[in-house]
Each structure stands twice: as structure tokens, then as C-alpha cells.
Image: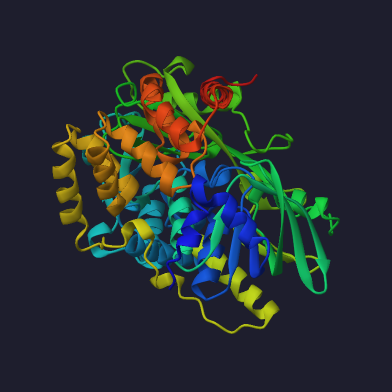
Length: 548
């Protein structure tokens, strides 16, 4: 393992230009295009095998699908209905590996699955399904499923509608922060010698003398750079076919996009005690997850053909579907209305295209595509299976460039969990919260900070004290600017901290604390400050105003 300051330079403003310039003069083993969870996983896998690896992302890391999931590391219960037993077994194993390697980011939670007379599961079906799920997914003894009576179900979750309720199942899922998980994987890859840059777009790819020549445009410095590699992987998710087309490769359609919408409500408006996986309208199922004094609910699954893939918008009908599903399934004193929504997110699932099939019928399996210039594209898949997708892709890369090194990513702890194990998690968390109490944070605020930054929370505490800050968010901002390739207020408030989703009412006050730190560190002009503020305001509109 290497820990090279040159690699670290690519993740902060002061060293980025020098790092980009130096890397344009070398030949990499691999260039990964796409900074979502799949590209991040490939970058870590390849660099940990010793391949010189460069990752580029045209927007921010995890700004596409990888920050817009249901934020669960699924064991794959839903795949039992389509008899995809192998997929359930695989994602169950992957979930255990990820929990071991990032225990502060992967939080076990028991979900309630209510059983209704005419619901998706009969009681006997659910008992068999959950037992099979426990077996295939390798669920730990203390997390094994239970079947509850009607009274037991209502004690666990009083908001369940009593009419036609026949009981409930309890099963295990793991919650995460998808954007931070992606970022931490990339940060970990830097320790193995990789380079990773956001806000740099691949504008063309060509082959010369058996090498790939990738021309790029960097949006931070408004400069062009050319990089060279033995192999290129296209891990751009919803943009997979677009990248293949602009480089004049086989343009047959491989990807079908499905839109998934989630809404965020204040917990007082939807006061769930426990996460629930419930029967939604149109014979579908939705998740309702309490988190950070909120409850988020989703998701939808509809075909998406709009050309705007960077910021897909939720429609009024998407929102109404989720609201109607909530009101139909829960006994809430005041019915949920669109006015209760404080935030939302809309993501695009890049599914493998199959003619004449609806999105809900399409498999969530991944597929490797090799184009006629030998560029490899990886498409499909799920958040939980990112490491296996990365292994398959990197195995193929190694084969193409003539290297025989086995995958070791199953044993690599993520950087923010470097000193944290499953065994010492509780103690480390307790010690961290104690220190944050002394800085006047509430228990929930302290706990959230620990689960966001892991052992780097101590670095944030140090920044807070050494700079005599008045609010911990100032130290968070400086940490993210220095260590996490953060260049905009949206990067910080949405993908580094999730504050735009769970506490949007505090943003206006927090901007006044954070903007001066951004301005000083990034050497912003007044015009650039104004642009960052406008971008943030526009994003707030996107999350709360819905299209017809």
C-alpha cells in the first residue's frame, strides 16, 4: 500500500492543478470514467491489485444514481419473488463484507413487513420467504426473522392500519449513506496509489498504438487535459450508452432507465417508530425509513426517456403515488399532503435493456459490454453488489492487459473505518459522542457526525478547536474542502452531509457560516460566490417543486 501526498493532492484545490498536469504525462494501466459506486469500486479494486489507476467524473462524485438510492444495503428479499436465489445469496454475502469493512457507515436495522389480507404476501408465504432469506443471505443469529401477531405488530408500529392486518414479519436490512459510501471507497483507493478527480469530463476516446487516448475538459480550472491508458472502463451508469455513442462505438441500446422517487417528511408528520417495507398501490412495495428527525419514503419505478439525466425531476403524479400509498397503508392522524414534503430525491436506475419489458420486470443484474475498440462498459447492478461488479470488471481488465493479480477488496477496510471494527464500534462511538458533548452538540447530532465521518470525526474536532469556530459545521466544511474534493455548496450540503435532505430549514443560517470558509479556501471572487449560492438555491427548488 502506498500513501503518497501526490495522490492526496488530487483531492484538494491547492494540489489539483499540479496533480492533473503531472498525470497527463504518464501512461496508466486503467482509466475509469464515472465516479459513482461502480466506478469507485473498480478504482479501489484495480489500485489495490497494483494497477496504476485514474478515475474521472464529469460532475461530483456520486452525483448521479449513487446518491439517490433507498440508502439500504439490501439483503435482496424482493428478489425471492422472481426466484433469483443466487442474487439473494450474493448480496447477502456482500452485505456482511461491507459491514465488516465500514461498520460506522453500515447500520443494521430491523424492518417490519406488515401482512394484509390482500397484500403481496400471505402469512405462510412470508414465513417461508423470510426463512429462505435468512438462509441465503447468511443473516446473523441475533438478526433472524420473526413473525408477529396482529397485537405484536401494532405494538412495534402503532401507525399500521388495523383493517385486514394479519400480522407482520421482522427481518434485517442495513442502512447507509450512499454518497458517503461512494466517496469513502474512492478516498480509500488513494491510499493504494490511485488518482481521482471530479468535475472533469471525458470529451473523446481514441486508440493509438494499442493505447487509449482520453481527452478531457476540467471544469474547475477551465482547462483541457489528455490522459493515456492501456485500458478504459466506462462506468457511467445512466450515461453508458451516451459515452459509447459519442466515441463512435457500437450504438445498439444496452441501457433502459427507470426513475425512482423518494420524498422526505418531518418525523412529527409521519412519526414511525420502526422502518417499514409496506404494500404500496399498483401491487408494488415501498420503504418508509425514520432517519435524522425525518421519515423518507420510496420508491417509484417508471420508465424514463427524458434527455436530462443529471437532474431528473419528480412529477406531481410521482409524488401523489407515494403520498396515496402512505395514506392508504398507515393510520396517521393528519393525512400526508404535498405540503408536508421538505425534500426529495429522484434517481435513475441503469437497467439492462430487454425489448417489450416494463422496468419492474427487468433484472437488476449487471452486464459487461466489450466494444469494438476494446473499451469495457459495466452496466446494471445494485448498490449492494458494487464490489462483485468491480471484481468482475477488474478481472477482465487484468486479462486484457496481461496481469494476473487476484482481488483483495473483500479484506480492505474503508479509510474512515480504519480504526473501527464491529467489536469496538460501540466503544469508539461512545468516546466520540462524549467529546462532541463537550462542544455543545446534542446526542443525535454527535451520533450523526460519527456515522458520517467515522474516525475522521476526531479531525473535525481538532479543526473546530484549533480555529476557534463557533459551530461544528464550520469545521465540517473546512475538513471537506481539504480532504474530500468539495467545490460547491451543493457538494457539501447535499452529498457530503445530507443536510439538504434532512434539515433544509437550517440551510440559510448555515450558509452564512460556511460560505466565508469556502471563499477563503477556494479563493472565490464575489461573482463565483454568487454562482455557488444560485446553484444551491436552484437545487433547493428541484428538491421541493415538482413537474406536472
